[in-house]
Length: 389
Ligand SMILES: NC(=O)c1ccc[n+]([C@@H]2O[C@H](COP(=O)([O-])OP(=O)(O)OC[C@H]3O[C@@H](n4cnc5c(N)ncnc54)[C@H](OP(=O)(O)O)[C@@H]3O)[C@@H](O)[C@H]2O)c1
Image 1 (cartoon, helix red, strand yellow):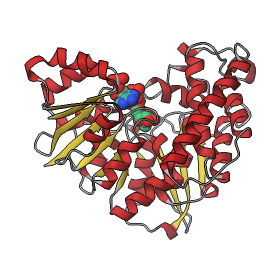
Image 2: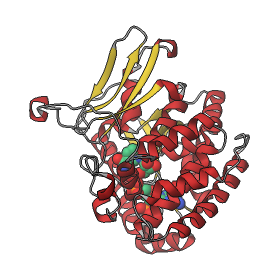
Image 3: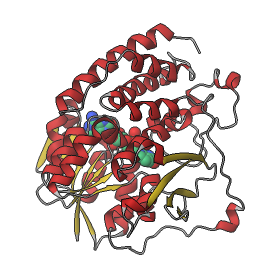
């Protein structure tokens, strides 16, 4: 029996993770859950999974949760960063599924590593911001970071039994998002509704917009660098609209190993929970005859500059990826609020990167300081571009 804590249990990944737990009652048990603002759903999860520790992002959320749980409230209910850390370090937890959105989970992930927990990581922002700190802490503590992101999970599967020296390159697949075939003029006029319609995956809002700009793939390139210890030059991206090949590894002898599967996040989540075993899942089989064809195309850097910006930040290193991530979050939020055009998102990010003098990521304080600076700078840049395309 593995005991599980989930950061972000009310989100898209969190709910899929609970479905995996529910499919394996003899193997997985929930001990702690953390949510942001959705007290109603967390209260339902408390009634169903009976964790003894939960957390909400704010004190107001905690009050709402207590009201909803009544006499069935868990023994410990925390708020904010401390609440998230309490969930991530629950003494009984063997594995912590990190699926909170944004950057709030960084300290909690580091605390879970310090406490010796296995990390099932969905939250790529954590590695983009603080990859050196997180991977060093995990190596020091002998803790595994198992990727939940479907592409990195695929690569983890392809690399089973291989050494780093056998890798020629990693090939991350990308669906290309809903605007894959749009020309530059059409891209200038797309709004949030269209951008939120992902062709192959059902996900949270922020990652769905990132998929439309290809920044999601850019963040994944940085994530792959930290997870697998390969350089930017060894990571390629290929557009694969069907999202059936989840990613590939080319070995030094030229063999390419791919992982294929249905587009359902329960598969990578279950893999992270079961690793190194494989469990019989409740997931449907992949029917390749229904897919009919698998297409692979090069990305279009002129129409989707976010991918290039991410490569640039990774190559420059230091705090540049922190700035990339923060500026992207600010720009995506402004786009969702209709204050910024779709094609202005990469411009905000590029201008914020330009304004930053990179430094070494020597501590969490540096990450948080630069993150705060970048958000302020990006807000200013976004105001300057407001209502432009
Ligand atoms: N969805 C996917 O298929 C997918 C695939 C690969 C990677 N990922 C990554 O997984 C992470 C989650 O994605 P998602 O699509 O599941 O996002 P989502 O549906 O927006 O869910 C985000 C979760 O984080 C919680 N949260 C937000 N702020 C919080 C805070 N300050 N403290 C604690 N919890 C907080 C939310 O709680 P409330 O809802 O209660 O506010 C929710 O449970 C992201 O980093 C994303 O890049 C997602």
